[in-house]
Length: 185
Image (cartoon, rainbow, N blue to C red; front, side):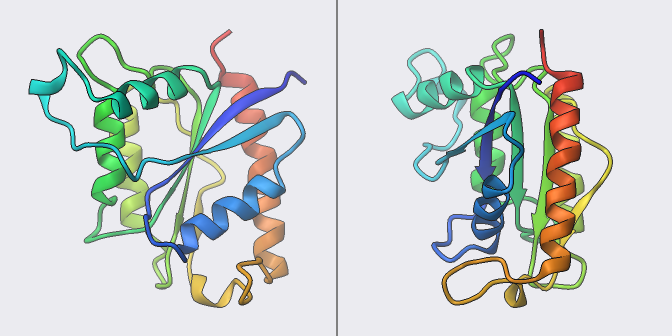
């Protein structure tokens, strides 16, 4: 199987983010064909159409990084039944200006991680809606809603729950197949 570059995008800025911990754990269990790179979206200036003619360097950098990858793996907490503003901002920035959508056609998957019982279900599906509009084919199955996140990690941020490890490993294998099937050739 070919080697694919995957951008890992985490929608939580918190230093001890469970989404970030889950992303790092999954990056460590990725199949060899997936080369994973964590993209930092924390410093992106907010999207403003007035800036499109002379975009901030952070916008240009994000668009270049997204354009250079084969696939996308999103991690999102749920804020008020939606995605965090920083994640929506990154989507808006890299999809503009009209006709220059850096996300276009890149296969993706979504993992929502929460301390709550509904596991970020609303954010997961809200993100899926935005990705559909910007033409990002998003893996439908398996879905990844990780709840009870506060009990999944040790004090060093290591994933300690074997059933969750097994599920995430299986998810990554499915994602590998999804990317291989849907990558732009």
